[in-house]
Image (cartoon, rainbow, N blue to C red; front, side, top):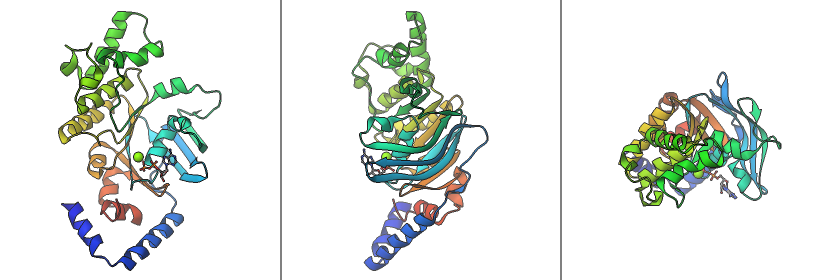
Length: 292
Ligand SMILES: Nc1ncnc2c1ncn2[C@@H]1O[C@H](COP(=O)(O)OP(=O)(O)O)[C@@H](O)[C@H]1O
Ligand SMILES: [Mg+2]
């Protein structure tokens, strides 16, 4: 409803005015330093002056913020503003992209996650990731969840592994639906179930932080509602950073919201404030639908 109204307004504007508006936006971005509450006491993760480049092209500009323990932080902003790039920096997933390099300080519980001596495999167990498109391995439901505990050597006995698999599937809200078909392929599940399987696979290695990049964008509303419920439950035990293109979703699941624009972190504030009384004009422009 709101979207339709906004689109009409934009379409009615003469083109010259739109051009001018784009220029104004860029000036506002250039002048921006992050407003609001980017920092918390005793952060789980602390990022300072982070720049990310793809070759010559800079995608993230001087971003500083904290993620608190057991907090759900959402990251919003127009397409291409760097949400995924910043999220991937938090568990060094960008390392897998050729030509991508990072400057600045990123810490997990005070430890530099870009320390060359640090092994990224255990890091990615501590900071797990759930992707936009559910990506179960071509293995059984059981083996999808058992995969992490096996490669990280977390359990020796089959009975212990069974227990980790069951607990993880329960916490992901999937156990009752799959307990009688654990040997069947994970890829045979519905999209929403596959995403919950991927969440079970992520939590099976007891991460401290779970990164989610638009985890519901391939799902129908019912499956989306289940994942959102799950995020609320998981936040009791895990710290969660979620990228979403849905402002409603950010409003429903997160306690703080970070607004990105053209690679800069414009505003971080309590979610309610961001959506009712944003501090920055760019945040306001976004939440009222001026750019999407
Ligand atoms: N693998 C890549 N190689 C080169 N440029 C990229 C790559 N991934 C993203 N970018 C660029 O970085 C910027 C931020 O992209 P991204 O982080 O995907 O934004 P968002 O997730 O907010 O849509 C965009 O300009 C995008 O084109
Ligand atoms: Mg993205």
